[in-house]
Length: 196
Image (cartoon, rainbow, N blue to C red; front, side, top):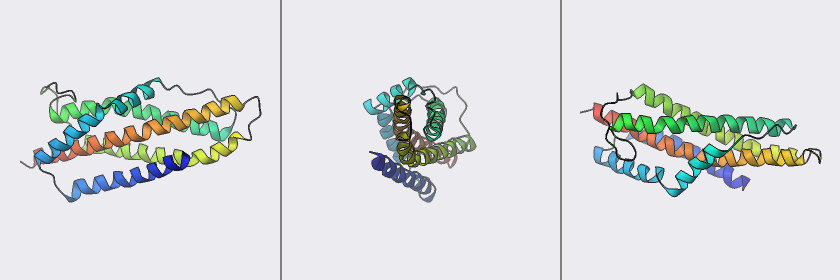
């Protein structure tokens, strides 16, 4: 499972950079951008995405385990999860401000459109968090080995903490990737609107 998470994260990082290059290398038509947005809205409302958001909202950080590498990983995972929750509130708002309607299709033209800089900053934050997920995922193997060094009395706490980190990273990775696709589409949509 660890190898799968690592390879998935590596592939996703490659995907992030290819999306960024594709956005700047080729301009999409308004119809293509709308079709992409419609697909992303479907993905955002999918059962998997809804369940993932619910799990992210409910996941609570563990108490310290006493093993430095495990506690460090849990701390990093908590930071990533907190950032993911914050981004999950920002992306729908940016969507509404850019498109003039909510993801659910409720029209709202009274909001101020975001600037390219605001969207670019959010995209950079997402890319940074995706890299943080990859780095933390890479450290899971070392932390897993440290579980064996824990005293029998602390074994339960250590295992719980490690499992928390694995779950947090497994939830945050796909969520951040989906949000980055949405933001990249919004950037392209804003550029397209400004080129008229």
